[in-house]
Length: 94
Image (tube, rainbow, N blue to C red; front, top):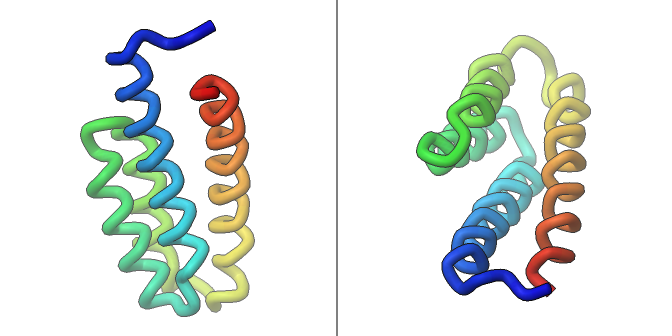
């Protein structure tokens, strides 16, 4: 089953946003870069999913509450969730 062109375009843009977020969060190697990546990603999510943008801002705001090693598992869980969405979307785009 093929998606109509307008739906394909929307889904592809959503997929690209997810992939960019996964990449930015995954590349963060310090609390500072993680806070910046989460805030930058949140701004991109504002018009798409305000609740998720809020989650990302929460990560950015709480990154200094513990060590990077303590915060990283939460970020990895978010990345894992997003990677699951990528798989689902990729299946729809085929």
